[in-house]
Image 1 (cartoon, rainbow, N blue to C red):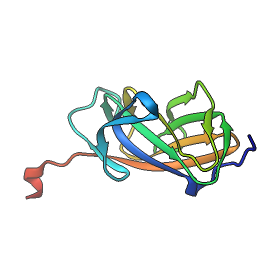
Image 2 (tube, one colour; image 1 turned 180 degrees about the vertical axis):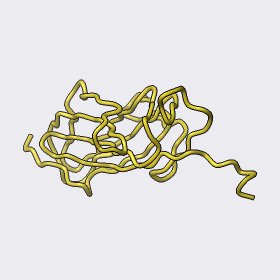
Image 3 (cartoon, rainbow, N blue to C red; image 1 turned 90 degrees about the vertical axis):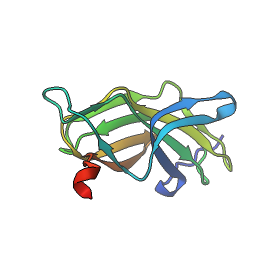
Length: 145
């Protein structure tokens, strides 16, 4: 297979509380988070800004890219230094020309040192992608009325 590296336009992502692989290459998304912004509720444990059971990302790789790509995923805190989650993919991401590949990554639990804009980093072979998303404190609906 000839390798053609993916471009930013070839990859999309969805955020959810959990992403589960299904039979036949499908995925189930639980608690889809609309946009790239979500609100956390409740009081966090001491020493952190928030703690939630999980956050997951479903990546959809399309376009003309093709090849087997070693994958690496990490989430970096708003200070752009603190790595909150880091994981290499066990198997290379396989993408055939003219086909779509889907794969998931995430953090269980997702504990953050600060509210603000986090960055999900996805490395596929020699290509690096960044996906910013914002974590904010939920507001009380009664206060907004």
